[in-house]
Image (cartoon, rainbow, N blue to C red; front, side, top):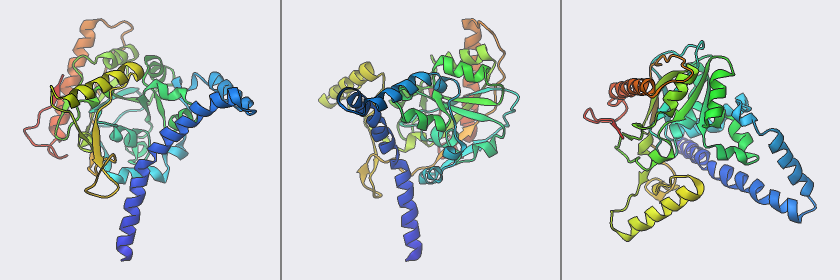
Length: 337
């Protein structure tokens, strides 16, 4: 009985570690958004709101210049439970020399990019041990950094805006041994994720290659096997009223928030139930061989296309070498659109 109680406790802690994102982004995000205007206009605590806004203004550029990462936060035990929930694993195929900077391009986006977060924004899978002397930065939407409290939390994990200026700063102004991690397909690729699918939005995504050429950063392909398996996505049949409603909702959110909303579900609090927790399925992020890139101040389109094609070839090679080992059939092909 004691053995099963320990198992239940471990599973409960793993589930809570995943659920913690809800209070972090909903409550920590909502508190400053709602309370600062209220304090400023209707409360005797208006000075707190003024101080918060003054600090945000003073500190505005920090998130675009490397942020304030915290080894303590990155090593929280919480992330170990988060890792074990799936579980998540990081696999190295080649060393990354600290003499260079890198753009680690990751695929696929999945619904929430759990593999990228756990492997590169925390130490749960031991990235500092696997890639010694390499400092990872995970790129995400810049809007997150406009929210007091939340911006401090995400900066502490080494998360940065995926803006051109922030990435260029990390690759040119902070010495060597830096690796910015970009999920190239972005949120738009989330609409393509389905269990068993390997479809990437990459054919016209060339900005990361151009950035590599301008900064001389090496390009590193990486693929998170299993990322598409942790949620089921519902795409209703074309021509039905549900599909029309789904499209209208997605288009509205795209216009207002700039986000691509996918209709997904996973498991509930108990196995076999329906809910919005991800399924307990393994995610393995395999980091491939770095592709040396020359530094060119103003690369022309022909050069960008050349290295984009080389990158795609390297990514296909990585996918084909590891797909069977991490749960895909030998016949599975990587589809790039």
